[in-house]
Length: 413
Image (cartoon, rainbow, N blue to C red; front, side, top):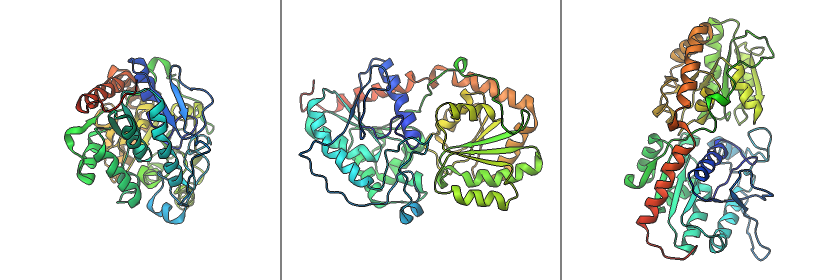
């Protein structure tokens, strides 16, 4: 398996999804060798073999300066907005100022790794590893599964960066099978990149944990134990709709005068949103935490009365499942991938600020409603279909289908 993010080296949800998939695969009996682009001293998951793709001294890498960050915006590309720190908890990010050169370095090592590591199938996550997966397939003849978490259209709301879009198109159309995390993302792959629909399997993400293991009691908020709190948690980029959350907050504040709003995350819109909060008269009621990780994320969920996910584009949306697991009702964008499978969340159109305001204000005003939604949500995410084992089982079935459709052309075991 070729990955790019894995805790603690992460910048967004890709790391969370990858670690969850790996845990599930190991539990259903699939051995995994994960290849990542950073040094690894020990495996963070029991039973997982992790290889850091470090270049041998004989490899020559030609570095091409490029101000690219796959979680940025089109404006971010132009402005060269870069970060050497992660977007979650201040950990090191696997993205940097010379991303394309790092992708090429990673790709250059793929054949060598495929030659020495026994494997039956190759799983490559997102555009940054697709070419590496193709190189590994050329070496071993084993089938390639392209695991897509989001496409450039999701991240930018437009065609975005043509080089990234090209790599996505080539990786998806050239793979033996494709795994998309929602029907919405499958449609985008088919419509925008011409991927054959029949080779795309939709596998919704599961979540690591159970309602019994997540404390139900509310965490203490620093601005009062009974203060109504609405939470946004995610990258502060246009895709995730933090600006929509802020405009909604201004409306909710008029209906629920005691309400406070927490925006947890970092990204290229952060500075402008801080200024906008002051313009709206919310400087004392909107709290910007920056990126959070680990226990701080759990505390943020348990501190809030409602979590709002107003994404303009959201292939899946693990934040919704995490929110419900922690007993926090969630308002989600109607077209988010998670809305295809979750029942006990409030679904609204991201652009309908009036409806979003009404739903959030109702939850903040009426404790019995909040408690009912929290209870139903916690019980729903405890169902087997939201466990890590279910997406792992379906992924293993895709591996088998890919193997059956591509005769062995090399020996790897």
